[in-house]
Length: 637
Image 1 (cartoon, helix red, strand yellow):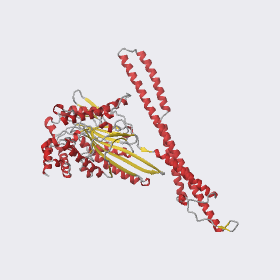
Image 2: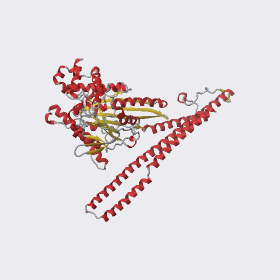
Image 3: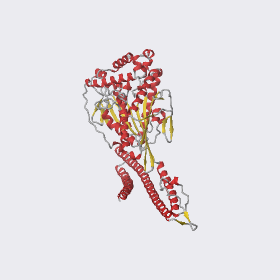
Image 4: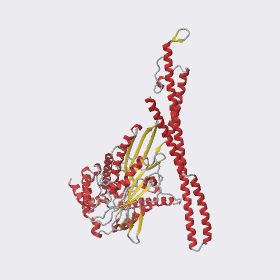
């Protein structure tokens, strides 16, 4: 297809083919964002069909992306590389992770300014902006240009899959200016993602490859529990504050709704069930094709819109005659470029586009700022509904989710101000407090057990009547699962109603069978009652533990207020507004109050409740093992 070949050549020329790093967003499959402007409107009018994302076009651009990756070694890099290792315990104590990812310098940047950079990395967690004045930042991880997609996935993507498998909502979104590597980080070479171990594969295909591997392993381990998984995916973009369905281009301007059960969702958004990573890759490619068509017809490219790929993961299993239901929502977000808009030449649609991007990202920044202030004890309104993006992602920002923010930055001096802005945004995001909980439907557990107990009691009552001879007619169908079949009706002989010896033996045998069934019913009733009691005790202990955690938070806030008051008094003493004696007197009172707070906290120690809860679980496990051993010995004898 000569037109595609010409297009690829033009794109190579536009973005600097020589020594261009694949870490840049500009060279990944979905980040060739300015193609219509590059080729000119006349070319679009003459060849509208060629802009659709045909398979050959995708392969062409993907192969070009790989060529670019191989050519990155030509650009000399003088920066030091820092090793980092994944921390398996991080998500036990945190609900928000902030990562900085630095892309390599491009060939055009090197030709203009050499290898000079506006940032200096000091460790795998610390980075300094070298402008005036210098600013030093600390994050959970700083990934330099030498960090591969695979290593980043081990730190950011792999734990996210484990969180989803455990029933936690999870979100990963990439933030940064256009060309900083957001789309390369999130998607990378998605066509190559269909081949295992593709070097340029982004977080999204890697996440789903690992997810379906984990699902299969879990199914193999828990065969006895009849474990079942379903995964449904949707793909949307937010452009000019309108939501478009990328899996169904005919659905435009979709509306966000809020429901007590479903939470926040997009009405009439198409969901596709997937069973493998390959299915997900096909949806990503389909969405990419629809975005390219939209770029031709509506004159906007991927950098001018936010994209959100969502997967709902549901699992069901059976345990002790009770069905459990667990679900998790996974959001993978590629945000629009955060750079300042140059309004001097913006007109019409471009001006409207820039305004809406600024509104959306400004609202995101305001939401994060207010969430940080709330975590510091202030009472503020969080304007989630001021933007479609923040409304849709409100669970991921200060809500029920574990969230990873990857802030992509350019090290170039020409992007110095944008890099500083991104670092400040990421620094604020570090202080967001999410409240992630396991999404498991346990409301039906107690009800199911009580219903089963009632059925067993009815069964016991009927069996008692049979043993005592008060029930003559027996519904064989209703007892077929628990009572052996009757040997047949008893026959009377003679006028005096005496039984024949054979009939008497049959009746005795039948009575013994009923007694055995009765004993079994009693045993099942006791087991269910014990399980119900254990579940109730565990639920009460969990509620008590939650209350104690809330009390501890309040205690910490009170101690923090004591400290702030002490700092203010010291400032007053330093300025001469308060005497040292008055300060010491008030400080003594504050310490006495703090001692009382700590004493109360010790009295309601969470560890005691946690150990009590673990004790209940261990007792229940011992009871089950003892019963199992009894059955084994019984059958052995």
